[in-house]
Structures are given as structure tokens and as C-alpha cells.
Length: 111
Length: 112
Image (cartoon, rainbow over all chains, first blue to last red; front, side, top):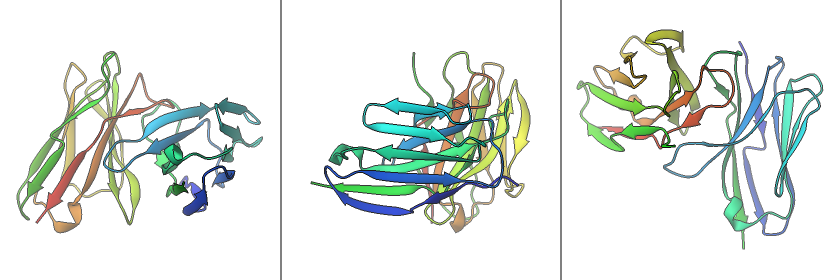
């Protein structure tokens, strides 16, 4: 059974600080996705990483996929209050719509 | 391009009743997956439909069922509702599955 473990579960920081969220597994994933979810809404896809060692940047967000495709990280530089939300990593068997989600990281950025 | 649409947004039901939730995927997407999200368990996969056939199933009791129509729209049904079924039910669509999935806003189901 594929599992994804996210850490930390909760993060409360001041605006302007940097942070990193980790997503780890003992299984190999063909790709991993990162989502951001706001209360009462569905998750919004931020990025998909597919190649081991891949690094993708989305403005102040940097996503890495581990060389062995078992882990990923999300780094936010100079966090803003608008970054507040639940961050979720997800992956699953290729060519199916089944996604396994990590427990999520609740990020609170204080002004 | 319209996103994934779920209806209704909110629902209150009584224990023992049944409920049907609807999901219209992004045009052209053939894979529709359903998830249950609760504070304690997080996001859990219910099932996936592809070309009107259930392709994958999660570890939920048989009270949870679904179907997909020829236009890719999907419905999920929960029978004999229990208090523990209170959750945000999310639908996600993708072209053929595998990777980029797009979620609807969800249906918040409260069982009283």
C-alpha cells in the first residue's frame, strides 16, 4: 500500500519568513502533485513533478522531486499572508485517477 | 473552460436516509474520482470512474456507490447514512487519469 507522510502538520510563521514542507514515502511514485486548499473549497493543483531530481518554480514556491521519486518538498520564500492554507501532496498509480494524499500541512502566515 | 462542478454545495440529512451527489467534470475529461475529506482522516479515495466503468475502488463500505454517464458526469450515492458520513465530498476529473486532477468545490454533507 502506498502511503505519503507530510511534515510538519502545522506551521505558524510570520510574514517574510521561509518554510519547507516535506512529503515522504517508502514507495516510488511516477509523479507527485502539490495542492493548496482553502477552507470549504476543493484543492487547487499547484504543480506536478514527474522526473526524479526535478525542480519546479512557481513564483516564490519551489518544488523538488527526489532522485528516487519517493519524496518531494515544497519551499516557500518570503511567505505572505495569502499563502495561508492547507498544502497537500498526492500521488498514485499511473494512468488511473486514484490519488493517495498526505495528511496535509496547515500553514498560517501572520502579518 | 468551465471547471469541475459539484452540486449541491451543502446538504443536511438525517441518519438512515440516503443521498445522491453530482459531479460534472471538465469538458473532455473522462476520469472522475470521488474523495471523502474529514478532519481526522484527511482526504480518502472513494472510487474512480472511467468511460462509465468503475476502474478503482477505495476501502469504503458498500453503502457508498457511484456511477458515470455517457457524458462523463458522475453521481455518488450513500445509503443508510451514519453520523460518521458527515464530511466534505470532493470530485476530481482528469483526462484519462494519472497525474493532473482538477477538483470541484465539494459538497459539504452533514448527517444529524
